[in-house]
Length: 307
Length: 302
Image 1 (cartoon, each protein chain N blue to C red):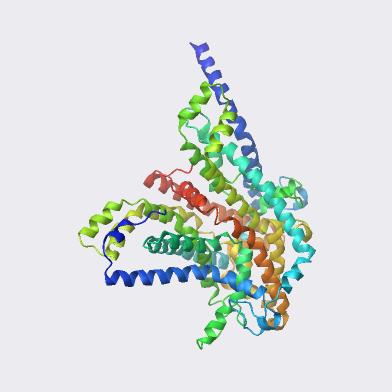
Image 2: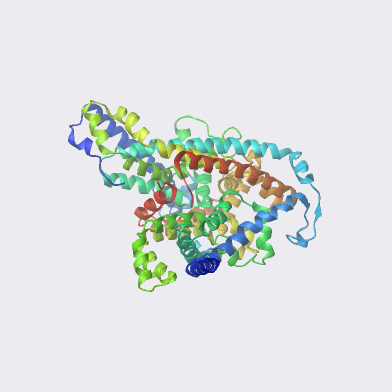
């Protein structure tokens, strides 16, 4: 009996061996570049001296870095800015693509629709360096095309990227601008999946265009909308480093400095590795909680599984 | 996605419908314009003379047409050197990404009764989506491996793109198992089955992950700045960051920034911005139907 079991196990191992070999390179790379940095979060609890190496003999100091960090003047501002920017980005990156997808779906000429789609995907494929370069140029208070337009209308120039009153909204809306087109893809796919006979029946019953949008299209997208909303929960501390670092300047730190730019400044520029990692650990822990909750909800509500 | 809506064709359009369609069309055209006009503005500036740009005459059409700024860029060695770094990075990075993606996704696409350890491996990769070491430990890891200043620092840390792996494995799952069973009967091993059956059947998702990988490697700039030792090793986007963003920001910060921004600088910046997005603009429209499909599959499977 026992021998038979052993044989079966060996046969299984032999059959599955190629799978293990295939996964080996990916496991090694992921281990080195994801798991080692996770272990490296111990830096947050050390008086870290880079010359001694990542897992060298460092002095352990408990929560001192965290205490130091949250007594820094900019830390809480960065946290507050992060949440407010990320919150509005999450909301608008749901609403805007949904509205645009519904409107695109009403277009009858598929050639026109495809042309519009190609155009609105374009900003997504640009890097934030390039897009920011474009923004710095067109939003410039003296020579930018936007302010020249405002001046033409008799309004004063607005210093979008240098004025604390406008910086956050500029960051939020330019992010939506860059991403909304690409965001329509999943919603358009969901609309395509709606049963066409529902529309025909509604038309027979005399429902107008907007009634059909409200009572058929939107409910038909309900699943995917809730799923996307749930999954975007994990971004609550992601204000978007690539974007903000390219657009920020010291006069708008008060409203524009976020966790990631803060970490970069104190860690990589001022070389305060301990406090910077402490901030990173804080961000990772909170994000991990929200991402786990979001995947758990998605799994419970929609049986959504990543793998 | 390209399916036409039948109901609007069957029934005669009412006046309200017509109004809606006109408004909708105008609105969508405006949206499309908002997305492409900045590029046209940049192109127009890059092709105009300094004088007309300073005078604020240039909006969407070059004034005083000249290709002088392109001529200037053409003889600038740093632009082409960083372009070379970017091309090398893309070639290496995309090859590694696609290879890793396929060999990782294939075993993970098998069901648990075919591959018992699958669940454990899936969790191993899934955990990296939940928890992230953060910037400093990540940087210290790469530093400890003595990769700083080498091209490998730019391509190895992102070698296994989890999102693309998920996309690929969902595609593999859609391939009928009978194909594999028949091949096993004929004595084919798993490597042969993967490369001779699964990969050729997955052209659409291969194109998608290739595109994502190209865009990722072409557009990354931050890793270049912190992982390269000298600006001469910068890939294109990191190089552009130093000339487009850093110079504009110092200009914005100083009091008389208006006089500091020399206008020839501006036209040259615009021509470099434009040159750097040409490759992407050439690639993505042709792969549009693939990545649309790929995106849907990757993020919204049933």
